[in-house]
Amino acid sequence: EVQLVESGGGLVKPGESLRLSCADSGSTFSSYNMNWVRQTPGKGLEWVSCISSGSAYIYYADSVKGRFTVSRDDGKNSLYLQMNNLRDEDTAVYYCARGGDFKTQIRDNWLDPWGQGTLVTVSS
Amino acid sequence: QSVLTQPPSASGTPGQGVTISCSGSSSNIGSNPVNWYQQFPGTAPKLLIYSNNGRPSGVPDRFSGSKSGTSASLAISGLQSEDEADFYCAAWDERLSGLVFGGGTKLTVL
Image (spheres, chains in turn red, purple):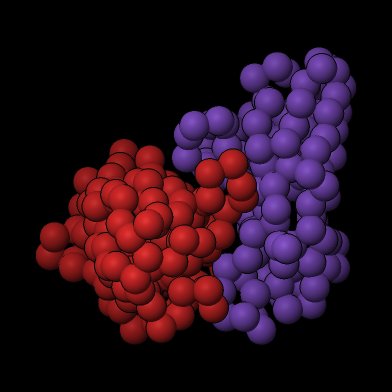
């Protein structure tokens, strides 16, 4: 069974940076599109970014475009989210979630499984 | 304000059925499949329905999804107390080039 484990969350000040990681325990990480989704405490889900298998296609939500960078290291079965110039409104639990495999179009993907999440708090 | 519109709450008594709606537009639900996620307090979301009406292994057939035009629905029959959770719809949006979620619906089993 695939298990995703996020790490790297913490408390930072506005304007600072943080790098999140997501480790995949499975053996087929490279074949899958991967996503980051965040959830403000007590609020709904907000998709953040998606990176395709092979990294050919990368998408970002407008709210993070230009500040966040998604990447992956298939040799380490890991997904990353580099977050720069953090703002108060970036405070959230960040989940990584697997999308479809390389044969599918990203628009047709569903997210399964999800990691347990890592909390990012941006506060002065 | 979420791109996809869901009612903030829904409720029913044990054994009853309930339907949760998800309204979008031609650029998201009208163009792409809808997926539904279930989230219990303090836990990560979990896939409930994929590609409008698919049920992952392990999801009871009491849960069903449908889509028509720019709207989708999640139907739950034979409500059980353990169904109490938040439910989210999601679809890819062509205009935004990103995944959009509904605001979520909190289901209460009375």
